Amino acid sequence: MAFYNSPEWKQIREDVLKRDHWECQRCNGNFITEIPIDSKALTTATDVHHIKGIKEAPELCLSMTNLVSLCHECHDITEGRLTKHLNKKKEQQS
Image (tube, rainbow, N blue to C red):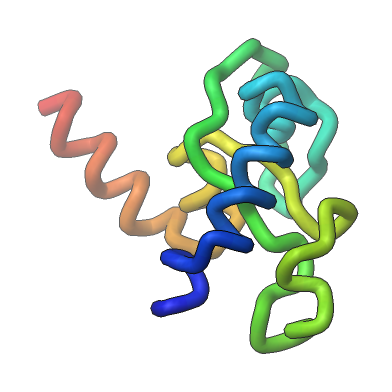
């Protein structure tokens, strides 16, 4: 998607990661999702998540208040890619 390659997105993404000190906000307990975390931890954030999706609220796509820093695992869980994530984790443990 062209949006994620835009200079505006790259800048706001960097700003959000800095605001959140490059820490996953779900792992540290500051961002609550439907699937609870097992225990709080300090994890490096690699992704920036739209709390309200771009399709749902396009006017908020570059709003700092609608963005949160997450690690890749938590982003997958938050986006509903949990099954894919769990299957991959299972394969790694085998």
